[in-house]
Image 1 (spheres, helix red, strand yellow):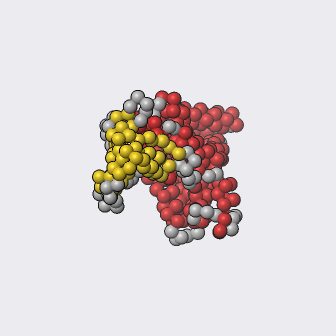
Image 2 (cartoon, helix red, strand yellow; image 1 turned 90 degrees about the vertical axis):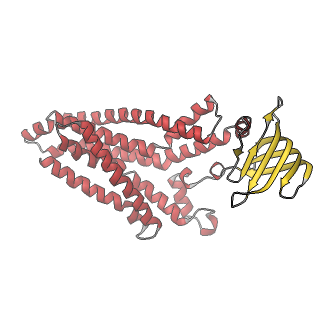
Image 3 (cartoon, helix red, strand yellow; image 1 turned 180 degrees about the horizontal axis):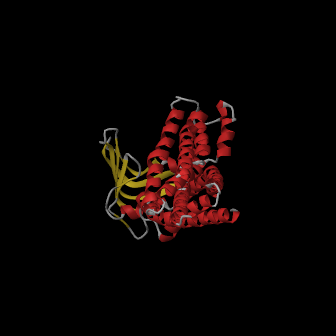
Length: 356
């Protein structure tokens, strides 16, 4: 029996690795679209450096789904090959076949916890660092050189006529819009230098021989306009901090904590710990679904398990987070409320499926 359990465990690992490769291959396309959408004009070298980081940020989605695929395929094969019936006919409880799945789910949950506590925050910081290292001013200049206006932020619209041989923008126009989307100031200049001040994290446009066409009619030889970079490129957010760092933050005195709110940090830490149980939950849900299908199509079993994960697990995560953030129930209880129900459902469903 131990040999069978070992074989099932190794099959689970192999199927999980294959599923991860396939899912990551699909996510490469998704990440590519996201990168191109966020950073136009990116060179091939910067693009190749950025894709793995964007993939690593999705580890909390990739690993649980890979576990689900592995469980459905492995236990679906056991049912299709009548190995469950053979074990039952030998006088051995079919529950022994659950042991490798539960061990596999527990180990992958520990791995997922480590990824959510350390791996994903590191990937988020690497993503931020890569984005900051990209020559944003150069990319902006390339975009402007096409002749189309470019938004440097939500209210600043920049356009140029062309870029000369020295890299200086010519025939520059800058419009700053008010809250209603109407130009509050409009400035034109014969030339301008555009660069990013790394120390202050701002985009700098130095206009030469400028005049205001809207907003006062000022003229002059030189005008410096600074616009802040996106906040995501400047400040660390909670997703970029490890769980020990967040727990250390919670241990500080209120006047030493800085910009974050205590409730948000508490919810973030609690949801990371509860989220790591996704692998074990998917094992408990995937096993009975695969066994119920028996000799039926395993693709159908996977679709059923995937729909259960999509419409039961992920909504339960959203509901648990909402309950915690709105103080409906204590944070610890709220973060585990959905998981607890799904674990009980998986155990009951597994027991029922093994009896048949």
